[in-house]
Image (cartoon, rainbow, N blue to C red; front, side, top):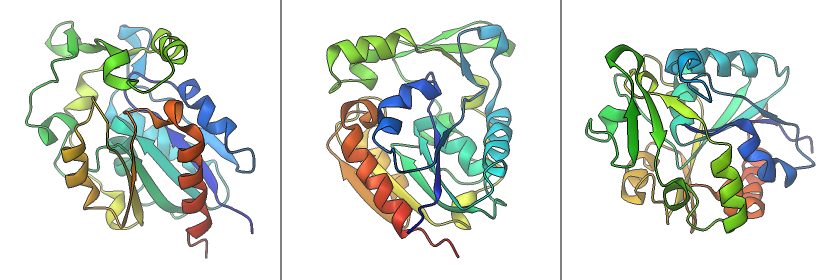
Length: 233
């Protein structure tokens, strides 16, 4: 059986190389990653949610075969925006991700107030966000040395990306799965439960916000099972 390709989309602050441990667990899968414009090391060069969506749409269009897209955290928002008309996408997997509807933004979906661990820099037109205490927030169950390495590679994220509203919703046309992280300090599990009700299938992992680092083999098995069950007709 030939599995579909897999496109991995990181969340805010993170880069594609944060997903390497997970990619290494999927040697039998055609895995692609995409870098989001809204996260990076230079605050002056950060993009926004709509630019992220365009980047994801381009990455999917470049895969000339069936593909399953797995989006982590904020990455679920531009994925939802980008893929409404993507005919080769067979399933979207939301990994502790924001599974939003038209007119919703990341901040509006959590009450409009930035998390206390957000440090917002800049003026109204040029705000960007630094994540404070990332080991506790993102990597609570990750090996300490691996967690420190992950922290060293985090970037900043665009504030505007978190307030821009969805105008398209891919999950209403494409089957979806939610992977809920039950020991998550960044995205409360009770909120994940609410978003997960919009998905067709739900998996639960007893992990922090970053199972791609703390339990990559277990997450890889979930993804492999989802790829195997994707309707590639």
